[in-house]
Image (cartoon, rainbow, N blue to C red):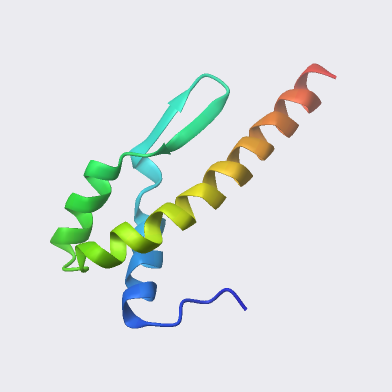
Length: 80
């Protein structure tokens, strides 16, 4: 249902999986990926910059939402 529909989509999806070490975060919340690092890694992998710019923010937004939900749940379980 949510599978990438193009080669570039699959490339950006793979790139997203490689960015786990490039998180911008504050205590208790994830803010997003370091997009400079994402673009540099994408360029090294020869992923078109336009595809990264168009697709990665959508993936990032969902990653932020779900990660912060999990952090909040874990904090509630730890403190409750």
